[in-house]
Length: 132
Image (cartoon, rainbow, N blue to C red; front, top):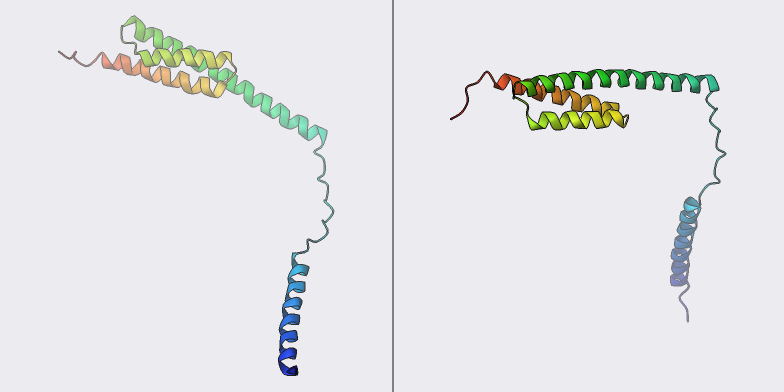
């Protein structure tokens, strides 16, 4: 015959695990997606204003890049005239010209500054005695 107390214990254990599974399944069920709140569109005037600010900044960079490339050309020519031009200065000047032609003003500024600095160092090197 069956022992009713052991049967009740098994059913209780089984129902507890079933209840636990149901609770876990309920927690795992994704909620209905909430309605997305649409972002307000940026007004046309504000968009145009930002674009104008970007263009003004780009024009400012272009002017600065052209001025620094011109200065670098002068420095390199001065170093070349005194036979103190370093190859790295020339390469930086060429890279600055290419960047300026490609409208990469930030790179043109960086390379032009580097070319000027190296040309100046080449000229300063003349003050030191030659190595034998």
